[in-house]
Image (cartoon, rainbow, N blue to C red):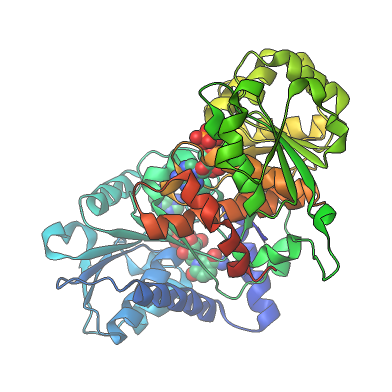
Length: 488
Ligand SMILES: NC(=O)C1=CN([C@@H]2O[C@H](COP(=O)(O)OP(=O)(O)OC[C@H]3O[C@@H](n4cnc5c(N)ncnc54)[C@H](O)[C@@H]3O)[C@@H](O)[C@H]2O)[C@@H](O)CC1
Ligand SMILES: Nc1ncnc2c1ncn2[C@@H]1O[C@H](COP(=O)(O)OP(=O)(O)O)[C@@H](O)[C@H]1O
Ligand SMILES: [K+]
């Protein structure tokens, strides 16, 4: 997992790195530019018109100048728009890269940019180095960049966005942001979705160990992290090792929620899945998920289950049932959907929730539980305090869902797709996380594997189906995610 540092720590990180590796800061900048260009070539952007690069006076501008030189080598026609009046104000590496710019690359002051003449814009004006409120000229430069209606790719950060805070005054509206070493916190906040666009992370050779020495409780979860979180099963593993889980889900008219979470639990590898459903609705489960068993309220020994997921589609008249469950079951449970709304209506239940349980609110449910938040950072802080006080885990769902752990760490997920913003996706996730808990995973392992693989299955289903991807399509991709990760 990559630790997310503050913008101000980037220059300290750079210093440690270049000293440790015995390289120059110019070589590190070259590595960043090469990483950007490798991604750019892979993307195969094509246009008959040249590329415009807006370059500032700092190291972000230095990156832009190096990128212009490298792209020209690859046959692209580049034009540089300088966002500085006087070359005396340039950072050292920016000055070096200005000197290395081939004379064939034309340079103009930023205000001479004519958006009609270009096929793509690269924004290397401001990165993590902005301090204080934006200067007036900076706002005009940002407006000029935004006057371009085609694809704008921002280098490290959309110019104008601060690395660590929520909100912005003037900011480049990028379609893609290519960021270096670690994703800057601001790139993961939903209120910035319109300005950051797609997020691409480029490795510039800074290791996780180098980041680990800094103090931060924010992390970014990558595909390569997942196999280590998985439990190993062996030749002699039997059905019992894969767990016996119960999903308390569904009610009249909402039985789909139960079917989706039960199917997802099987596809995640559960040995036995039972659904606690109203007696008169059982046929829906027994025909749509014949592998599942049904249990009914008056005949249940909850402690016989290795894990329980509660909430999808149960309706808001199940307060008594929820209270009884919380009093009788003492292992971590997964609480989602209606269980969360019931919790927000009955705060006294909070003290009954078994330690290390997992609450999975989307933003609406989060608000009902914790009140309105003006920014995502405020939301994260509330969640952190709650998790540490109650020794519970909260998953704040959305793009880049955040796993908030009981020990205060907060992990942003990197998988997922906008095709997942459709009904039933949360029910699938509840089934997956409950399944992992039932297989003997810790709450942290179950969350990390469940959340990442749910997003990965969503990406894979989205690649196949595009618009109109269903939660059921995502369930069918779950087994593929194990293969993709090399987990057997
Ligand atoms: N480890 C990393 O992440 C690396 C970062 N590099 C690049 O270096 C960048 C950081 O470079 P710098 O620290 O030089 O900073 P920037 O280049 O982001 O910003 C400095 C410039 O912003 C101007 N500025 C600051 N506050 C302003 C305000 N309020 N209004 C208008 N202008 C303002 C300054 O006058 C200066 O020209 C990163 O964003 C990244 O692009 C890469 O070169 C290499 C490695
Ligand atoms: N734009 C998106 N990008 C990535 N993941 C998304 C996006 N939109 C939704 N998701 C994921 O889909 C799931 C939706 O859950 P939820 O809102 O509870 O759905 P439902 O109530 O319909 O089951 C969450 O895990 C969320 O992270
Ligand atoms: K930028």
